[in-house]
Image (cartoon, rainbow, N blue to C red):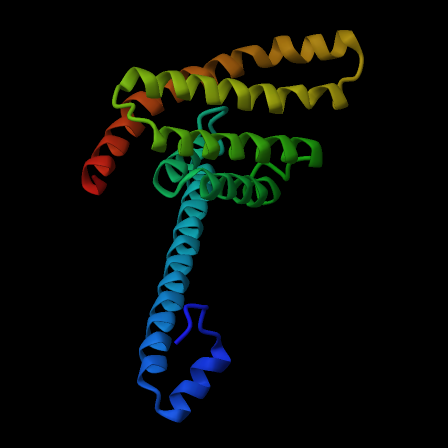
Length: 206
């Protein structure tokens, strides 16, 4: 038999003719296709679970200003599932939470910036997955960096709603304590909650 790939039609013909080599080849193809299908289903399921978890945690803490577990959950999804899946979790989480926010839906520019910030958190989780970083201070610094980028993205949207220099400056001054609070709380979450979880999961998967 030639070494070219066995198509679905040749599998059917081989089986009908009773050719043993085709039967074995088709069996291998079937196992390969089924294995890839099951991996895809498993990945989709995990993406859905992390997205639902991020949204649920967002609802739980939605009435506490700038205290959230959404971005850290998205980061964790990137650590466990890879950067691409983490970015998808980030986009979906903020898309759903932005539209169904208990405090009211996010305006479109803010929603887009939140989705970009969530995707960045998932992307950074994928980077952390590939690196051998096993120190809490590294995760704290990453948490500060991710939160800083997220807050820059979401805060810069204020220029659309406060277009003059004075109004935008006032907007930044009023929002600065909330940004600092957000960065501080996220550094604690990444260092004292997320780090033990990531360390435990890495031990289990290693």
